[in-house]
Length: 223
View 1 (cartoon, one colour):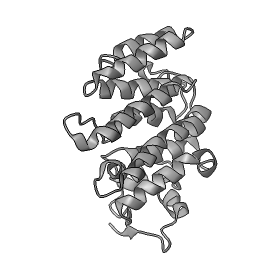
View 2 (cartoon, helix red, strand yellow):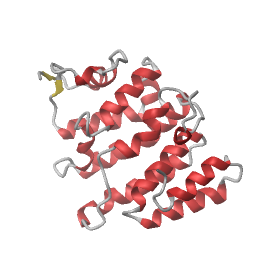
View 3 (tube, one colour):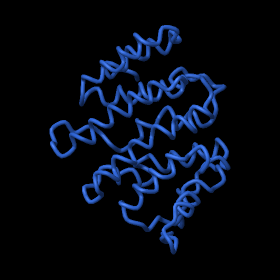
View 4 (tube, helix red, strand yellow):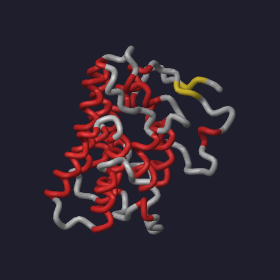
C-alpha cells in the first residue's frame, strides 16, 4: 500500500482521507492498493478530537452512507489502527483524553441529528444507514477496560464518564449505543450498572424495549 500524507498534516486532509469516498461494497479501504495514512499516533489523536468536536459542521457535506462507511473504517480495529492512538502510551494523556471526550460532541452533533430513532438490536429495518455505526460503535472500538493496570485508571474512568454523557442524549439511537457500550464495559467495571439505574430513574417515558435493553446492559447481556 502507498502512504497518504499531506504536506501540512492538516485536519482537512485527514477528513478527506477518512470520509471523502463514495459508499461502496466493498468499501474503498479494502482495495489492495488503498493508501495508508502516514502520520504518527499523536497527530491522529489530535485529528480525531478536532474533527469530532466540530463534527456537525466539518462532516456536514457527507451523506449518511458515507459517514457510516467512514466510521466503520475509523473506529474498527479490523479496518484501521486509528483508535489505538487513544491508548498509545507514546501519545500524551491530555491528547488521548481529548480524543475520547470528543465522542460526546460527535454523537450530539451528528448521530442525534442524523440517525433515525429506531432500535438496531430489534432490527427495525427502516433505520437510517448511519444507525449501524452508531449502534456498533463500542462493539467495534478496539479499546477495552484494564482495571488491573494503574496507568489506565484515568482513561478508563473517563470512558465511564463519556458513556454516562452519551446515555443522557435524548435520542434512542444514541441511548442504545451507550447501553451497548455499558454492556461491553460492565465486565471490567461492574459499577457502571449505577449509571443505568440512574438513567432509568430519570427517564420515565422510555420505550419499553429500550428499558428492557438497559436492564440487560447492566449485567453485560445485550446479545
